[in-house]
Image: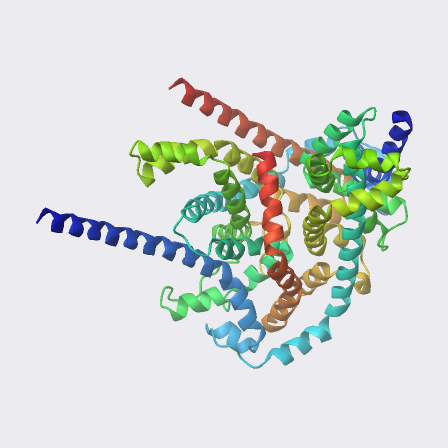
Length: 289
Length: 298
């Protein structure tokens, strides 16, 4: 009798727990759906004609993608912007990785005068709001006669404070001093040590930072907007934004196609590298927390 | 080992970084300060020193202060749901029985990767009037009798801006909070379980207090980042309304410098904005420190 009661009590508790779990899953999935909805609207919108987009709500894809795409291309050279963005992001990522690794290595493994002070200096500047130097940067580039060139967008990639900080942290624990000392004993040059021992040791950190740098550069907007005025030099975000301000607000279908093209590379990258990206952020959190 | 010779190499290794850093990060910051005390003529390219007059003009400008208020409003509209959702979801995702944690975190995080420009465009299309997807949804589901005018109702366009920023950032905060949750030792929970604490008590009595440092960090970074919002408001409803309601302070600075070509005035705005952001950050830290001490006294 009491046994029966205990079983029933147990069953009721399990039911209650299942109900709670069900509700919590529902919360999780609802938020996931809300995250996904704008993308869905973008995908559906890119395949519909403007009349459908603006007059009724539908989740069924249409068949006007080709026409929307063509109207988009007539307006702006999206693939030109795509290529500009792509090579700029790749170049900047490569530069950032190489020089930040070099700087991080120096801060991690060398005892030189001013090391602590310089590192603190970098950390402090990192905290300053980014817009503080925008006007000075614009005037400086203009004084240097570098407007409408890619140089002011490429060279700053060399000095990425976050990357230096990240690489220094990584090398502090990830590269034993003995390896460097052994290489010095064997007569390896300093630059040789960097190329043949330090860089290969940093594989994982380079991939992580590389993915983040690429995304940051791909999305970069304000500086390219200020520096590049010629349409054929423009990067994808600047080009997309210029459609908007050019009074094309009514052409929903074409704009959805443009948005799709700018989001696609990130979607591909994220599919392959989402683990790497989220780990990098978690590392940042662990350091700061 | 010849350490002095090695020192030279260290300077050589950090030289490219500092050359670029000084030229394109440090110099522009000081140059901006210099410009803020000058009047710059965009036609003759002449700079005339004007003392504090750019700052006094800025402080007397209603447009500037209303942009400051807009920024704080949009930031509050975005930060409150953003942190609430992120905290609740992180706590649920931290439970053992939840399946597909990594997939869910990835979905939540993805919006953070997209260009703010694209997000601004996307939300402008979604919340368009009368033909945006949200209005179509509202009307066809019977929730609204007629399309809601999001672009031209100040409070609604601010809310749309807040939603866009919240949508972009809450997944990022989830990863941060999760890292904080993982750093709490499981011994503490086991001890609490032995003492008979239920899930609710464990969350409120152990997890929440131990999360304080990471929540403070998230608050500070979101103040620094959130008060600088620029791209999304710039794109949002641009062209379809006069966007006074969503003009943030950094957008105001941008328009002063690069649309009205008043570099001195814009630079003064940049420095004032940095001070405002600094003041907000310090206030948060001080307030948090005071509350932390209060708790200890109890």
